Amino acid sequence: MLEDLAPILVALGALLSLIAIRVPIGLSLIAVSFVGIAYEISLRAAIGSLARLPYDLASNWSFSAVPMFLFMGYVASETGLTSGLFRASRQVLARLPGALACSSVLASALFAAASGSSVATASAMSKIAIPEMLSRRYDPGLACGTIAASGTLGSLIPPSILMILYGVYSDVSIGALFMAGILPGIVSMVIYIGMIVTRCKLNPSLAGGDQAEEEPRVGVGRLLMDIAPLPILIAIVMGSISMGWATPTEAGALGAFGAVLIAVALRTFSFAGFWSALKQSALSFTAIFVIIIGGALLTRYAAVAGLNKVLEQLFVDSAAGPLALIIAVSVLYIVLGMFIDSIGLLLLTAPLVLPLAVSLDMDMIWFGIILIKLLEIGLITPPVGLNIFVIKSALGGKVALPTIFKGVTWFITMDVLTLALLVAFPAITLWLPELIYG
Image (cartoon, rainbow, N blue to C red; front, side, top):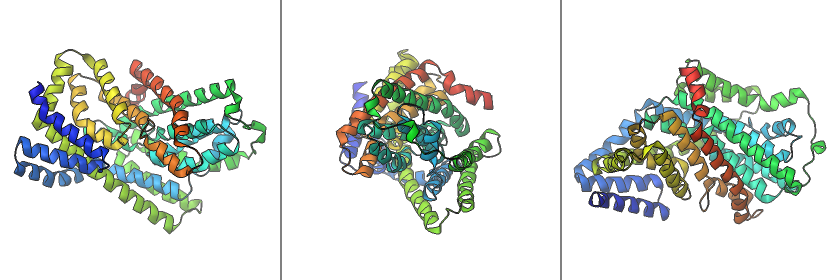
């Protein structure tokens, strides 16, 4: 077995080395897989695979959902449809200890439901919520940790880009995945808020100056105006999918069109913002598509190199079982998540772990939510938690990087607790998909 693994281990070492020296992960995947296929079969086979794959992937209708949801999120952000979320959340949760931090979690969850992007959520909320919390003498670690962790809810709460990519790779219904992420996303949010309330109750100095009576009160009408755009978008997207009226791609297009109409109705639409949303969507999807090509090429290399058979012998034939696979994948994702962004990590590991889950007869919807939760944790783990550096970039020198990492450790602990609940009680994930799709 060791002799069979030698070329594969060399290839994986080369891949991680390229990523470590900051070669873009898509190009790293393509380069290593191309050389691997050339070594295992022939140079002509490697060239043929690389020439054909982009066309095969571009013709996959499911991938077109990604730019639609990216565009919807960017339109919502550029036209200010999310600007009132934090203000409205403060009104709803004003009486809780650590109200501003709790409000940030709720606002981030709602923003994530519209954007589908953890990084976009963390970036937007870091500019709105963290300065407000710091001005109220909040502990900087708590303020930054709250936004860094809450931003990861964009991976789990639908519509999620990671869910779309996982659904395409695993051949699982994207609509069912969207439904499966709702309750785990709510559980994650509630556990975050519960931890914040408990800590601030035991140590009020963490939320210094956070007094409910200081919060300016607004009328119900204004509150509804602040919140309304996102529930409308969510209803358009999730309602059309759950009722069977639209595919995820069509629902994404409806959501993007709805975001433009709402912005026009609220008089926040501008052609400059519209063009910016188009440009950012195109740039983001181009980067994602290069990674998708690399991931697909890696899948072919893993197949011809026999890696799938080796892993199957290790986990399936040895009767190690599903729990052993989940533990191994957890360790893999937490370690690699420190260095690789979530989309790259999913596409890097999908060729390895998905065939094993199928061989072990695991529920692929439940397994997908577990993987996405692990990817969430990777976004905030040191030394390269992507969301943490997004926040650091937004804040400049206001908060030191070690302070942010220290503040986020509480949330990582809560994520591990949530992960344990999802593993122990699959019904949290599967109840809604089974209710809607049977």
